[in-house]
Amino acid sequence: MAKKLKDMGMKLKRLRQLFSIARSSFYCSGKPEKDVFLKEKIREIAFAYPFYGYRRIHIELKKQGISVNLKKVYRLYRKMSLQRPKRIKAKKKAAISFPAVKASHPFEIWALDFFFTRLRSGRAIKVLAVIDEFTKFAFPPLVGYSITGDDVADHLEALTKRYLLPSYIRSDNGPEFISKSLAPSLKKLRIKHIRIQKGKPFQNGVAESFIGKFRDEWNTKCLAPF
Image 1 (cartoon, rainbow, N blue to C red):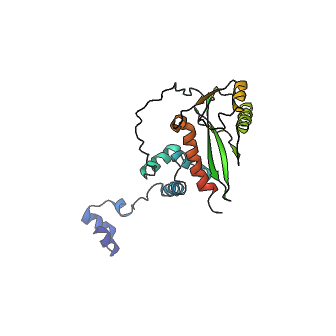
Image 2 (cartoon, helix red, strand yellow):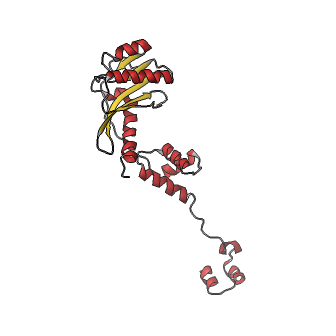
Image 3 (cartoon, rainbow, N blue to C red):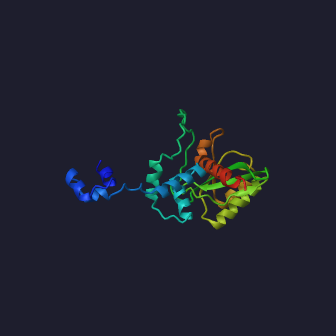
């Protein structure tokens, strides 16, 4: 009512006397919502790359020249409910029957696994992923139209010359990993080979997780239309 009377021409002094209102009340305006621009950028990145978590979004913001604290990105990310829903996994009744070796420090265990993807031309390629289980660091992959046991042995030997030598490698029982050419190479390098049980890829969970994220990013960025 007071603002309407003011708009109609009543003097401010008279309005203050009638309604006992402080002078500042007539001049304050609603504060704009904080971080509107930042929220829009976070939402834009999250929808463009739905597999990104708040850490990856923070990196993308920095690439775009937006300086912001990681904790703030996390707070806004949670506030906007952008988290990916967690998959509900069925409970496994059977325990692993063999001694489970877990990495306790960097470069102790390297996880290896193969997967296939496609180029924009449609041609399939094979990729050998190699990940340090403790740090989750992904080493340069081996990529080719076909990969043999000899190729795996050569690639691992090249990696050990560039990085610290691991104590173990972990893999499934694929033909490239049980080939006669790989065993002598591992023996020469004094690397022990941990093979997971057949039909239980979760025993090589670090590699499986990396491959899932790699596929998401590859399909979104590399296979997107020009």
